[in-house]
Image (cartoon, rainbow, N blue to C red; front, side):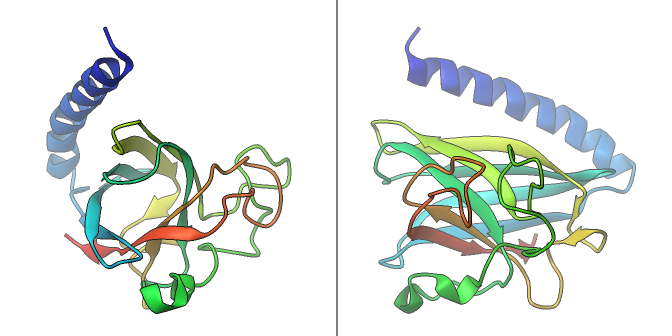
Length: 181
């Protein structure tokens, strides 16, 4: 079995689990969703992010294509604004910046916007699914659909999950604004 086939199989299994679990979450009143079209610096939609509220956080699924292979840092940014003319700096810093050092491995972290890395294959396709504990689409400690919204940003390089300020993730190459789904 190739690495790509194995990744598709794992993603399919996870998607099935989400579909089954998603029905229970909807029945329990936790059906709030959000989506984002992910665009590159040329303004082309190259992927999507789908988020679903759970009782204790948000389940996030991101899929992109047409990116250079390798690990790419992914973060929630503070403002739902993705102006390519600013190289996506219009999305400001990480969500909750100043409320913890950067990095999932940092003893003083993680920051609220820290998410991990997406792995992009040689075919240019990247996909990740993760759970963001404490995040919320409708309030809470990490409100993603607050008054100024939230952007999902993918950086050019891997995030080392510890160094400051952004783990060496480099320039912003993909951005999408969350919208209630």
